[in-house]
Structures are given as C-alpha cells and as structure tokens.
Image 1 (cartoon, one colour):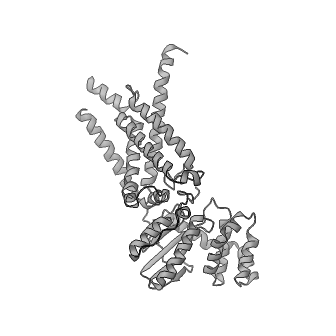
Image 2 (cartoon, chains in turn green, purple):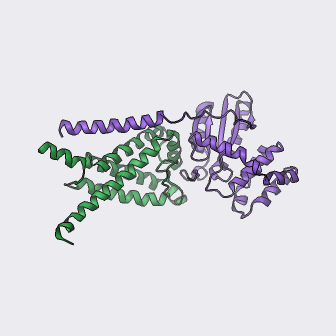
Image 3 (tube, one colour):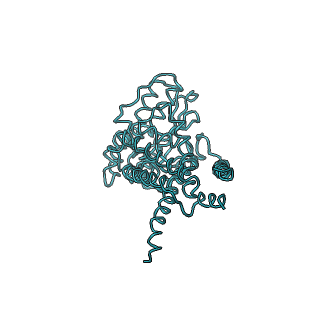
Length: 161
Length: 227
C-alpha cells in the first residue's frame, strides 16, 4: 500500500461514517414523517419518561430534525452543525432509553425508532448501543477540519476560488 | 458564511419539506374509522347513538391489547350507553397463535358469542399463546361458553372464515395502522393504552386513573406489524 493511499484511509473512514450516520437519521425521520404523527406519539408515550404535555410537540419536531440533520450529513452541508445535531439527538435518545424501564423490561422488543412501518427494526438494546456509537462518531465528525466529498468543501472552494 | 452557502441551505430545507408535504398530500386518503367493512357485520357493543364511539384494531395475542381490553371493559361499565366499541381484527405477523385465535373469535361470532369469546381469549392469553397447538384450548373455551361444538370445529377448519379477518387487516393497513392496539375515538387516532386513556379523559372530562406503571409499560411498538 502506498503512503498516499495510507494517508487517505482516515478520510475515507470518516466519509463513510458521515454517510452512514446521515442515512440512519434521514431514514428514521423520513419513515416517521410519512406515517400519521400519532404512531410516533404512541411509541413515545409508552416510554413514560417525557411529560405527556410535551409529547405532541416532540413527536412533530424530532422527525423533521432527524431528516434535516441526516440529509445535511449525507450531503456534507453545514457538517459541523449537522454532526452536533445528530450527537444532541443521540444524547437525548440515550437519556430517554436510560431513564425508562423499557431497556430492562423490554430490551429485546422493537424500539420504534424508524417509524412503525419501516423496513429496519432494531431492538431497544441494539438502538441503545447504536445511539452511543453514533454520538461518539458524530462528536468526532464535528471536530474534523477537512471534509472531503462534501457540499461544504465544494462551496468553500468555489468561494475562495 | 456567505450568501451562496446560506441560499444552498434554504433550498435544501425547502426541497425536503416540499418533498414530504408532496408525498403526504399524494398518499391515498386515509379512510375514516370504519362504519363496517362491506358485506360483513360489525362487532359492536354499547350504545347505538353513543357520544363516544371507539373503533379498536386489536390482536388477541398482544399483551398491550389485553390491558386495553380490561380498561375498555371498565369504561363501558362506567359510561354505559354513552360509549360504543367496535372491534376490528389486526392479527400481527409476529404472533404465531394469533390468526387461529381470530378465526376462533369469528366462529364464536357466527353463534352470537363474539364478545364472550373475545373476553375469554384475552383472559386466557398466557395459556393459549404458549401452547404449541392451541386449537384444543379454543374448543374448550367454546364448550365452556355453551357453543355448538360441531359447528364451531367445522367453522374453524373453513378457510372462508379468514376472509373478514383479512379484510379488517387490509382496511387497517390502508389507514396506516402499524401496531396494536390502535384506536379511533370519534375519528381521532390513538396508539396504545396511554394515548387511549388520555383521549378518553379529554372526552369524558373525568379523571381516569392510569393503570399501574408495570402494566402500562408495554414495549414501545413491541406489538408492531411484522413487515
């Protein structure tokens, strides 16, 4: 393996991480937004952590945040902001999962994270681990100085050129 | 950050929002809670002109549906003819014993004992759901309820009995029902027992004590339609 190829490996890894996390969030948001909002509200209510008065607002807002942050991640637009947004969402999901009895009582059941009609179904325990990993990766992505193959890179190059 | 950068962001957000609104707008109109599926008799109990009309999509093997059935029973007793309940079949793919249980309930309906059989199936859910072959248990319940056993057994073996069940499920799917129990209370959708309790509380104005946490902590979408 040549030295130049070796030096590009980390860039490729972070590019892949950005795309995967972006897809993960964009898909989660998309599936929820194309279902009746009550389906997601029903899932949230069963965790019994969030005060009921906030549920309608959260059930409406979170899918949009997921879709926007995920799409921005994939395209590499405002990547730092998008990475911080996905890290923030992951942190909140971890808090909700950690504070509810669901992780212990029903850890092997579907988390409902991708909307109930989704093709992807992850258990509560799987999503807990995945959210933790996604949060760490998102924080690292937010700290990167260069972001190859991104809209951000392209727009900045055009501006400086 | 320059204007071109900001403008790109605005265009992206507008495209995403527009795409979602367009998709939702062009989706086939969701049917309102059913009057009755064509050609079949609705399973309704309660007042004919009830001010609170509940349509429930339920699965006999789903634990959350069992808890909801208990709550609904209490509501029906408390509010009498002010409420009506319509049952719709929604057996989930993940529940192996469910299709036969729904068939058994349909067969009981042929002998005007649907609600008694419904209550029995939920009461004995742990027993028949764990049985490798629950048919015998279903026959026992039928016998206990005084049903004509020969007719019941014939009905249970008849593939035509699946039709109203499949029809209910298809109707539920077209209304984007993905998990059980899902309710339509005077046309308003509520997913799960907690949402049902809150909606009922809003409509009746009576504080309804929620079921104990251990009972209501159904797995989030643990009872989802297997796709």
